[in-house]
Length: 445
Ligand code: CMC
Image 1 (cartoon, helix red, strand yellow):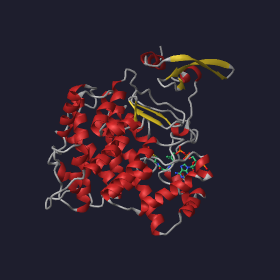
Image 2 (image 1 turned 90 degrees about the vertical axis):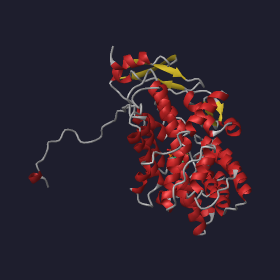
Image 3 (image 1 turned 60 degrees about the horizontal axis):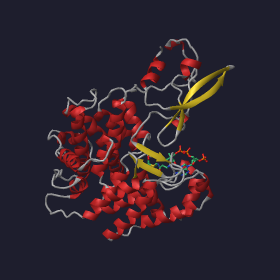
């Protein structure tokens, strides 16, 4: 039995519902057709190369399923997003970020006792090792907080050297999970404090997850800090809405890095770097910068849209479009509503919100956007909420990272626990020179 046959046997979770016949070089090869629990179909090509010598080519993985996963279901055409089967709208309405984290990571909603135990454990790990404060000294004050965040998460491996990255499951992994969930908001808030030259504010474990984060961000030792519970709740919903999104760029990164049996901290650090890109999580920062540019230069929304449509200097309408959602992004719907609520509650009137609404209205009527199925995504309105709360623009993607953490953990854990675990190693179609002799330096032109 060759390697791919062995892995096909091990991957017992695959449900074959038929076969697909491929004709190549005058021969017919049968490939299994597999189906997921929501009826989505895939041609299983795990034996393709063995049987034909061919690989598949799929630029940007537009048609490639990289794994089987029971964590998140999304249907881009119908605008559906569910975590472990539960619609995102129900979770946003009734759950919390911490409870949803449990759901994603452990596969089901916790009962009361389990939720209390989980919350307590995460909360007990909010403090950073004192020596980690020195680590912040090494960064320039204007360091981008995403760079600091990725480095600090990677640094956790130096403080917790028995991290069970290579061992799978068990209490040691749980400890690692509590540490990451507990410490990420502290790490993030410290990067902000460092950037403005304020003293670090220690976590307060009497507060819930989001309230504690807000306090670490905005409290100063010289004054009492008053927390608005409505704002904390809105932020909690925002984090929850970002918690997972199946095999996106950063989730695929966490799986790719973790597939080399790299530790959870190392894999999450890599995912943070992947998220930073402006086409991924970095878009929320870009949206606000775009809206600000429009405002500062007095550009009419229709003129900005014309620039985008003419693809001037590669301009894109940031916060619009999605690889998977081709109808609407269910998260954006909830966020748009939350945006109005938070701004009303805080009594903030933000001219950027008015510009955003005008742009959205114009784009949704414009054939360029309609024909390409470009709609507002999760990032279009989230930045306006962050701004209203006082979170600086450079921290927006950090907020996304705090929200996405449970998803990364769940993806890493599921992959590591899968009986069909394999190191990820795509192939390529080589397009370089064929064999070329080495030319000694003196003989080169
Ligand atoms: N503004 C203007 N044109 C766009 C946009 C946009 N935001 N997005 C796609 N297009 C056009 C693109 O130019 C192309 O046009 P044409 O057919 O004339 O060449 C067509 O639509 C298809 O674009 P694509 O780049 O092939 O689509 P994709 O599925 O590879 O890209 C995307 C998805 C999210 C990278 C893209 O829509 C984009 O760059 N959006 C702006 C950045 C953004 O908001 N990213 C956040 C995504 S949501 C958060 C997350 O989950 O990461």
